[in-house]
Amino acid sequence: MVKIDNMPRPKLKRRLRFSPEVLYFKPRGVPLSVLEEVELLPDELEALKLHDVDNLDQTAAAMKMKISQPTFGRILDKAYKKIATAIIKGKAIKIVKKENE
Image (cartoon, rainbow, N blue to C red; front, side, top):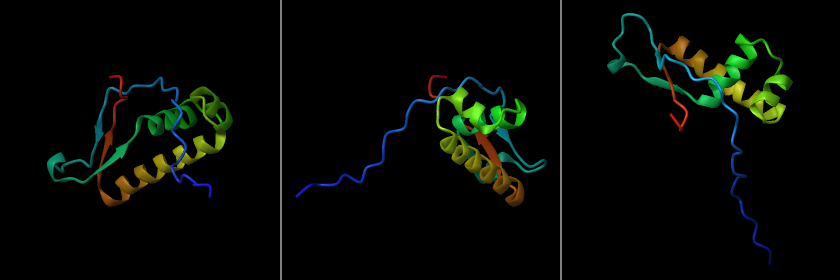
């Protein structure tokens, strides 16, 4: 009998070049200590920057990050949903720094 391993494939290292100086965005007038947070991961921030600030299409942006276009699309979708949730529900956005920083 062959045992099938249900473990997901390990994540490939992604090329991340952008490092923000700001680590939080929050609703005005509400102390950070009372807000729930949404964490924006480094690859999500990079995807947002490449697609929406640098105006690259998903294929070109995915090539810069050294990932496939479908993976890039999934990362971008997660980022948009996190930001929308934070805005609609009045949560803070915490920008997670890259591991090597």
